[in-house]
Image (cartoon, rainbow, N blue to C red):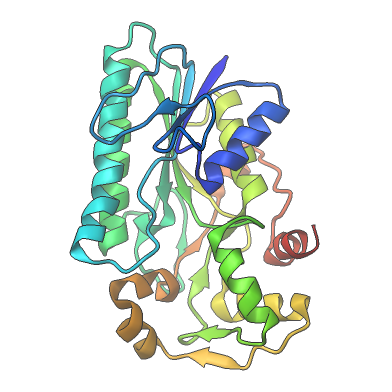
Amino acid sequence: MILGITGASGFIGQALTAEALREQRNVILFSRHPKTTPESRSWSDQSLPNIDGCDQLVHLAGESILGLWTQKKRERILSSRREGTRRLVEAIAQSSRKPSLLVSASAIGYYGNNHDSLLDESTCSGNGFLAEVARAWEEEALKAEAYGVRVVLMRIGIVLGRNGTIMKLMIPLFRLGLGGVIGSGQQWMSCIHIHDLVRLILQCCDDPSLCGPLNAVMPEPITNATFTKTLGTLLKRPTPCRIPAIALRTILGELSTLLLNSQRVLPQKAIRHHYNFKYPNLEKALTEIITG
């Protein structure tokens, strides 16, 4: 069984590749930057990828959502996901030997801003730019079902890991005593440790009953205030700062929704399929990242 991975040079792609190889799975890597990813195949949003030999596909490629959301940036975020996924499905359609599985990355941004509501895979899509992007992304991926492919829509939460951008930014700030609550601090954050994310993806490869939307988040969502307090406590640093929502919106514009939107997401399907989270809560996840 050969696993094809797009976005192989990214944070999640690298972690997934390492875990798949550790399990002695055969992989074919696809990357926009083949020079930095040895033996990978070239990936482009505008051309059909060569998926020959891939029995299963994990699709992670897409423009980073970090950075100011100018009109051009928004267009790249949407186009890279919609057009890139469309090209991948077209490649499946033209393949003489179809892959049996497509795990396509999506995001909990699909649910929009939902305050205190509990959200699971049956919850309808919300409003806003990220919800629009996620809907378009998933719509293209689901077209692979017409060719007999099992499709999993992996709605990924905030990914926590030692090499991830979020923790690389936050830990130094908190160590300097500059950590603090964002906005009211009552907005819900739904996170997942990188280990559990890649293990959940690989479970999709091994469990033919998994299909459709799948929330990739830990079972215990937390508020921003709890996140701040927990990280500060583990680093033994005070967290006196508070960033007002209005200041964040002024500085970051629409990008501020990433930090201010409230999404209390539960991994109901993963639990029903008996996925055993190694890091089921924030304290365990952050402890591994800080001390591991």
